Image 1 (cartoon, rainbow, N blue to C red):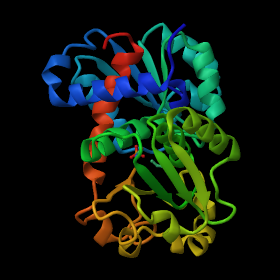
Image 2 (cartoon, rainbow, N blue to C red):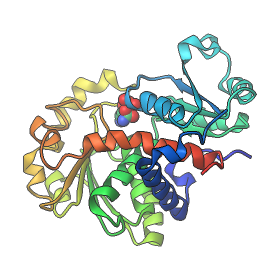
Image 3 (tube, rainbow, N blue to C red):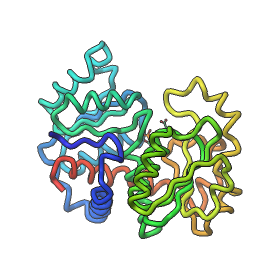
Image 4 (cartoon, rainbow, N blue to C red):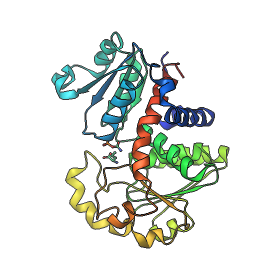
Length: 306
Ligand code: CP
Ligand code: NVA
């Protein structure tokens, strides 16, 4: 059975820590890993747009000596109705791993069930587990020990929030999520994150007051108010979310040495202000870079080549 990465919850706390250590090594000495994927091909399928995920995976594979094949669903037979399962069965005969960005999490599960090679979630409506690896590596670089740190997320309780809830608690962190009423992360994820926190010494709190949530935070995090697939709701959401904007007023409530993260792309002037994303607390460009290192480490881990 191939090992998949569809959710942050697919990793034990020990595996997550090991993967972050490997990511740091891959980043520090890329030359040691330059041939690690020699002879390996990785299919990258995108059913939604992408800048960072697409380019960072493609470069991660190439710079490890492997061959990435980037595909959009419209150019695959998927676009003409071939099933995701048959696509997985076929691709498994050619490639060593499949990376998929899609809508429903169920599509990833169907693909993983049919494929005989590792399947990686490159973002679904439910989770963004590759993003969370880069987020944790970045927090570790800036703050050292992850356990006991507080991350405050402001905005929509979305795919990125779900992965942060699961990943940060796995690392022993405290996560506070402040959303407008009705935009909370889904209760099953909050419940599971609380369960994880109970075992690791982390904590989970969901609230509606953004300024109260920011007090004492080591990390402030936000994401777009309308995710891919929710474009039709964007105007309506823009009326509800402004008080959750990550601006200087919020930064002033957090710890003096707070770092600011955003998975990007940012809608400047909406969920985050220019002065904050471009300001001294921002770590967003390191965070974006770390997508590449963590995904390289993830591929090595899943393929047993670490
Ligand atoms: N953060 C992230 O996944 O960016 P892309 O949508 O550009 O891949
Ligand atoms: N929540 C955002 C993340 C983009 C990387 C979306 O799904 O569009």
